[in-house]
Length: 187
Image (cartoon, rainbow, N blue to C red; front, side):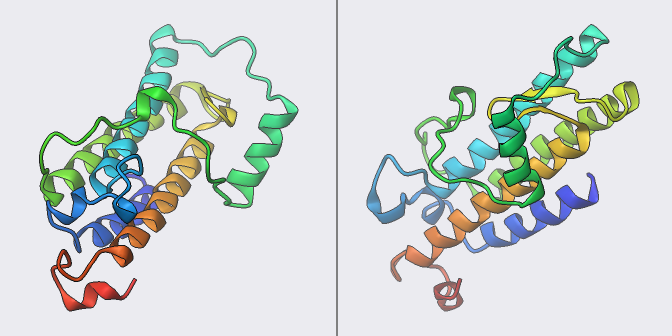
């Protein structure tokens, strides 16, 4: 796994270690339409899979799209997200990355392993795309437009950090009856 992805993954995995299957299934403020920790992790794994599929389609064709130009809006969003590191809130996730309603409690170790596998698979695909296409824009993000391999990695790192902050907020909002350790009150 690439070093920047590994650092972001390790920080998220450390935060997830404070949860168990019950607390990972708790929705923020008890609101069912807000994602639980396990749903956030599932969303991240689905996002990595979507990135991998986007790039796999380019690799299978052996060529890039003809028009990989950015619109002004995409340029501005890339500047805000990739350069400034600001992930805007309130943007709905694309349909393929929306997690399903939880089907029972999933252990935290399984969640972490699922995410780790998704990151490793995506990273291998990013490496293949870099070898085949070099520094060209290799795929199109639904919001940011066409991205190079390094930009895809940067986006995914920012995405992991964005959701880590949400998971920290969920943990801080857990009632003391759900918390496993007294140290969990600190976030």
